[in-house]
Length: 101
Image (cartoon, rainbow, N blue to C red; front, side):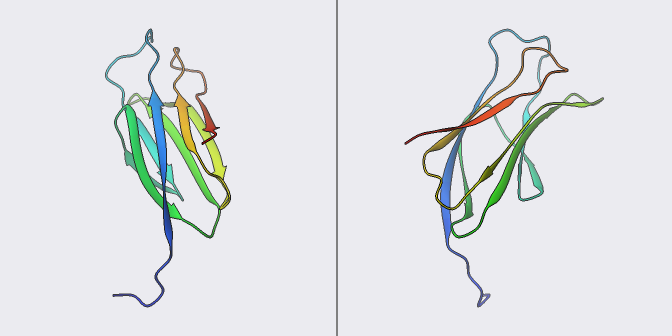
């Protein structure tokens, strides 16, 4: 057990895939505080520290290049959930926004 435990909060992130896209079988990658992890399309929850800002990013990767990148900085006072929208074309940026509670 570590003595320096931090308080955490849960955030919700909904990852929206376009209904028509010029790519198939690509799953998003979520980056929280510099650490990437593969995720699934749809709703998910993650833990972030309560008392500090956290940079959250999402991107898509098709074995040749990264695309659909979007990033947001979550401040400790942000409440609500997040929504990411992937682009329809494999060379555009994605969009991530805070959805008010």
